[in-house]
Image (cartoon, rainbow, N blue to C red; front, side, top):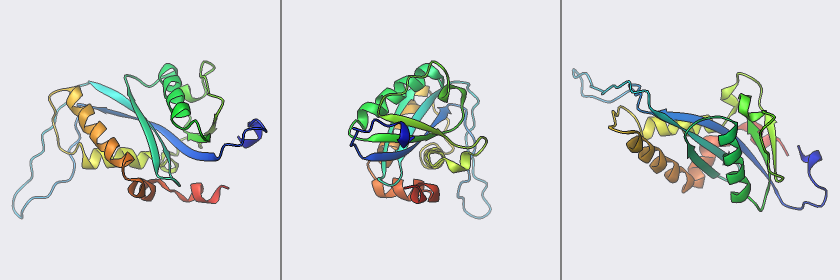
Length: 183
């Protein structure tokens, strides 16, 4: 990825990981505390209404950026890459992505300051952003049956904003060994 960089580009390299998560009104019951002898109750709903969150983290720096978009496809990935490019314009970004079809589509427009590196197929455990999704689902959306998609997205935004404002926590969740060993 660095070999394709313009030799005159002196911006520091920022190693990032990107992923998409789907959030909506289809709830999954989570563990809940209850006193002995009491069975906890968790509301459950099956409403097929959802949106996608695109997020990119820079684990070493504890930085993150995200966008909520209506679907996961090449057009939305183009919007997200432009967002990352402008947000981190002072960096040359090397971004780990999974092998979703829109990550290597012929219509994908990769900005000049970004290079994409594919992680091995069927290996979500290598993507630090998966921990961001777990955090949102466990801490901000557990056992809720919300009345609208807007309410779900408000909770997701609240969680994303909290993570983005806390670089130490974000770093502790996402700084995987393979990000440390790459120079």
